[in-house]
Image: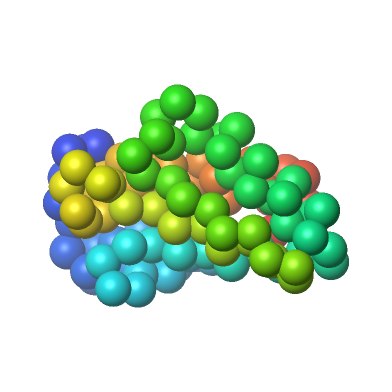
Amino acid sequence: MDDDARPTRQQISDAIETEGWCLVLGAIYAEVPAPSLADATVAAYLAVSAVGAEGQGHLTADIRADRAVLRLQSIDAGAVTGVDIRLAHEVSGGLTAEGFL
C-alpha cells in the first residue's frame, strides 16, 4: 500500500489484523501484554525504536502496569494512512523478535 494512501476501514482491518492490531475510532491499536511495568516500558521502547524518526506524528504509547498500549494514526491527516499500516508491521516485527508478541 502506498504511504500516502487513505485506506478504507476494511482495507485497514485486512492489512493489520494478522499483526495483532485493531482499528478503533479512526486509529489502529495494539495491546502488548507485559508481566511488569518495567517490561511494558521495554515494549514501548522497542516500538519507538522500530519506527525511528518516522514515527514522530504517528505513534503514541501508553505504558500500564501490565501492558503497553500502542496507537498509530497520522496527526497531519487525522486518519490512518499507508505509513501507519507500514509502521504497524515494523513495530510488530520488532516486538515479535523480542518475544513480546
